[in-house]
Image (cartoon, rainbow, N blue to C red):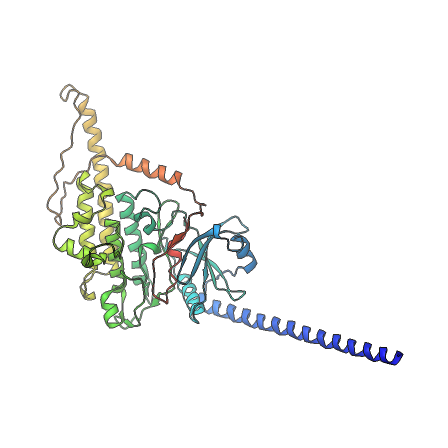
Length: 439
């Protein structure tokens, strides 16, 4: 009996030892696998970031920042993942993009975005703060954009609408950012997914171009590169879609669509419109060609309230028309687009300052007996659209405009994340999420 107990004890001890060895082997193997994967991730990050340093966030910190990716922190969801608002240990609000695994390209696209954003520096490009590649997840961390996207404002999902001066400034800043990618970077960078939901707005409504998951480096020795068309319906260059030739002019076309959105505040693709008008670019080209752009201008802009607003809207429409040319060779470069928008924008402030001075002088003169007690009215004469009007004067209404803008900024909460957004569809290889960041 004693012999049997000793035998049984030996068997149990042997089983325990074997189990312990298996457990140690499993843990060691898992640790080795994790270290190898972590080393690979660091190597990929070093290769992607080049001379830049991209911070690695611990998954537990990301999880804590989003309260375990709570729905209350969700800013929006798209075909390839979800964006959350988060607050890191330094009390810094960030936008956290968690990529959903749909194919083997997810890591490549994350690394592509890290590579491109690490190589650029421009005030109108969104900043990448770091990433997290743990627990089988691919997560990117960006600066927080409290005023959401241009698309949300144009579609009245946030606020009652943006004044024309703000829209024009956003257009100018965005054009400068894209021109920087095309002209100041060697080799140039083609964004491939320029759209209003990828244009973010900070505390001061300053624009930031986001979402570089689809971006590609151009080739200096050729005018285009061949790649399968990708992007968002309604924004894709038809020539790129037809012959697979991607170039800087593909971004120009997409930006032309954004300019039309800024003018009309209409959806880029709307099946509720007549069949010939479903595509906003086609609708706008038709109206501009016929000289009937006024038919689709956003009523919120009140284009007929003063000469400069009407004039500048028409000038931007003409620019959009050139950007939307079917043949890429006839489109302007982004540098030319940026310069023209900046000229129109600066002309706005110049005419406003002129109006202030004139209004002040008239106001002083109106108190004299010569003018009596009547209010003076500044005459406005706008030449035919498309012609220069050097004597253009705008009534001094900008003070009320600026006051309303300030009130809108004060009323906006930079940490409100309780109303999730939904992004428009992109092609299966896009990560068009950050463009909808922050409510």
